[in-house]
Image (tube, rainbow, N blue to C red; front, side):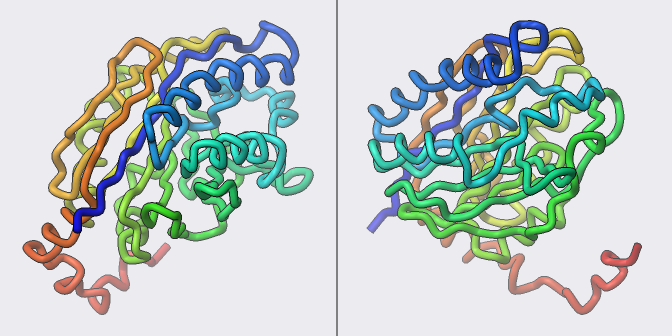
Length: 288
């Protein structure tokens, strides 16, 4: 019997940024803009929905202003509790990326996973933290320390890999070995830097590991930093590495796609990458 999934990705231009009010006001406006899209996903019968990287704030990392530390929150916490209400209402699994505060001075780029009954299942913390070309993330985020968890939701086993993580195949492989059937990669990436990699790396991860991926990017240019244009182009890719649904480059969009998880078994029965791995030969990969 086919294991059909309907999944959704939301890419949005944020309505407020630095200079448009207090941090709580900015966060509130961004969340409120997301809510109709979340509602629409639920009405369309989306079973698993993923939001964009640090979805309820601007991408503030082009600056190095400590005031944005105040935008971090506990996970689970107020935003995950709010999203859990929508998860319950629509019986929809949600991946909710936020700026996490574990305690004073311990801040992470995190994605919470909420099951279809509103249960908080856990979180992934971004492992690889860039500090280059305007992406000054080491000023804001501690490297993740929770490994590569896979969450057994009502509909599928899902993993999360956040933005810059996608440049590292090791974690993508770990998620596959841990049982992921779908890996979501919420991102914030701009034209002219790594755009040529956007449709290359994640299809390669999907094909190398025989799983589906949902890849989300922001849209628009965020003041006052004007790092560049977030070019959207959120997409779904299958275990053969084929992109089968893609969003626009320049507008708000809920991208919805249907796919059959049984394709994973079909692909892995042909390409026995996990059987033919040689972990005994990979020791040098973990050397400093």
